[in-house]
Structures are given as C-alpha cells and as structure tokens.
Image 1 (cartoon, one colour):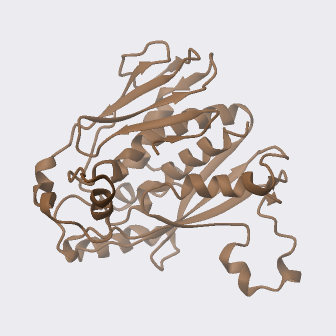
Image 2 (spheres, helix red, strand yellow):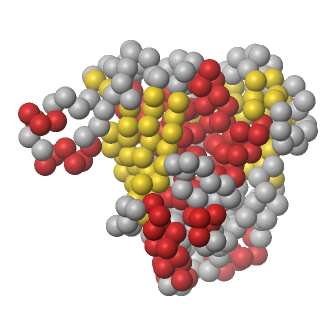
Length: 319
C-alpha cells in the first residue's frame, strides 16, 4: 500500500537510489498558503542539518553526523499549486484544490555502493521478504523499503501541519532517549560512541498534540489512538507506540492512574493535551555487522519530523 488517508490522500513514490522520491497529495482545499521556508526547514531537520528548540539534531550539537548520505532535498512542485515547476526556497505557494504533485531528486544516489547486495540479503531488513513476496527487489539501498521515502512524507505532512495550525492545533515531537541515555545534552556523545565502534543504537521520540477539539475520533474501530498508532508504526524502524500511561502503567494500581486519560477516552479526544511515545530500533546495517554502505548510527535522530508529519496526516483525516 503506497497511499495513506481517505480525506487528504497522500501517495508516495520512488526508490532510495532511483532518480527521485515524491508524492501526490489529493483532497487539499483551494486557497491554502504553503510556507516553503517551513517545508525546507522540516526537510533539513529530517536530514540532520538544523536544530530547533526541543528538536534534537545530533550533527549540529556535536559535529558528529549520524548519517553518511546527505541529500540537498530540494522540492520541485509539479501540479496543484501556483508557481509550480519552480524550486523556490522562500515565500508561499497557494493550493489550487487539485492534486498536489512534487518530487525530490536523489542527487546523492550512488547505487554502486550496494552492488554487493544483488545476490545477498541484509539481516534485519526487508530484502529477503520483498523478493519472496514479489519475486524481485530493488537492492539499491533497500529501494522502497529505505527511509529515503520518508522525505516525501515530511513534505506532505508539513502541508497538513500548516492547515492544522490554522485551526489552532500544534504538533511537537522531540527525541527523549538514546539507548539508556535520557539526558539530551549527552545524546551526541552516546551516538558518537556507537558510531566510532561501527555500531548503532535506538531511541525514543515523544510527541505532544495540543489544541485538538473535543470529539475527534470515533468509537470501536476508528479510535483516535488506533489511527495515530497506524500512522506512526508505518515509519521505518518504528517498533512500538504508547500513549497516556502506556506500558509503564502496568506497574501502577488503578487508583493511582485512573485520572490519566492521555487526552483520549473511548477513542475520542477529550480536549486535553495528547502525549504519545514511539520507539525506533537501531539500524541492523552497520560496519560492525559486516554491512557496507551508508547508514545511520541512530535513525531516531532524523525520525522526529517524520513522526510529526505522520501525526498531522492522521489528524487531518478527522477534520
């Protein structure tokens, strides 16, 4: 499945080391202003190039990059907005109410780095199951299974975030744990240690949703938390989702935590802040594991804007 949502329907396309990745966003109303500077900023967060309050960017904090691959991520707008076809870095575009199509060219693609994977499978990746299911696979950095695909999600999610912001709804995510370390000032040091050892480490991201009106979500099978979990768990390397008391609540008596709703009751928002956490595994492709190529020492550092994007694309379906 390459499409998400039935109100604002987002379809992504492209492979990791192909010509481009991109997306089509349908259902966006006409007259919405798209802040291009904000989209560029979100893409830079995903690439690990910018640092904002509460948004941990390891490369800028410590000078240690957790990623060897660096794409410029310039968005080319193909349809659905005024001024399409231009690579604009500032100002606004205005939506036309027609499908919005865009591409991000893979200017740093080097498929030759992965030639050795033509006839072998990486442990912990989708290589084997893709070939078993489809009879063929793109061995260039994982193809569709690569986190490169999430760049398109960030663009679409940023458009949704701008519409939500106009309705007074904010989404703020941050990295709160790297391995066993919970002190943000030590995240860079922790990742650098694993990187120097040719290894990787996982992390936890916390996301806060504020301003969501009472009544968002439906009972039984369309619960708000179920939609959020579905959206977030679709992100590469995400291995767990919790909200409210989460897994930690199992150690507490009901009398101590019965007042904690997590912002959702019966699958419906109650008007208070919603807080959820999601965990990202360490990438299994590391030099220590004998895997060549360009890989993240901690994928969670770059997943923060992706979590926000998928949260926005989930919420916009209800509104």
